[in-house]
Length: 182
Ligand SMILES: Nc1ncnc2c1ncn2[C@@H]1O[C@H](COP(=O)(O)OP(=O)(O)OP(=O)(O)O)[C@@H](O)[C@H]1O
Ligand SMILES: [Mg+2]
Image 1 (cartoon, rainbow, N blue to C red):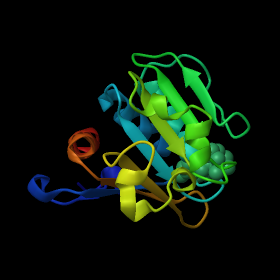
Image 2: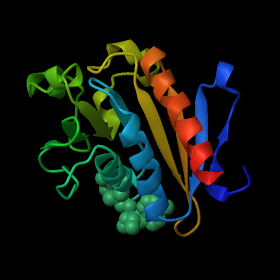
Image 3: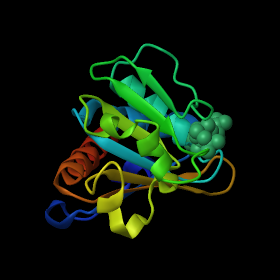
């Protein structure tokens, strides 16, 4: 795996995280599209990273992988936008949430266990305590992606699993990335 896009995963038996470098917005969408092809009903993807880190770009890739035809834009002002694809895509942006309890009050909790896939930007704003994942409205098992900015267009996407379902996604993602760059 010599390509810069190859990522760096531990062996499959103990894989809990995967780091994938991105050099461009298109590479970030590419990784999102691979994930989008793997997602199933009820899966939850949590996105963390600063303004402009690439969370929405990654979600656009997920939409591509789910076969969403519509253009995906940031739902900052509406908190949630829904898209039709192979599965429904629920795209959340919690930037404007001040208290995790608001999510419940706004009636969003039902989405996380629904038929669709939830992708959540600024997920930390919906969690009282990230370490207490089980307390989050989406439950303990979710795939977490942290976006770290480097110089220029460089980003490092750090993917981690927190339960059985997200572990399967992580394994699938690592295998697919390895295949695509081979
Ligand atoms: N490697 C990269 N991956 C993703 N985006 C990149 C990359 N390099 C440059 N960009 C640019 O950075 C910006 C990322 O914007 P995006 O809306 O995806 O960020 P965001 O994390 O969703 O921000 P916000 O917190 O405001 O919602 C875009 O303008 C994109 O073109
Ligand atoms: Mg965004």
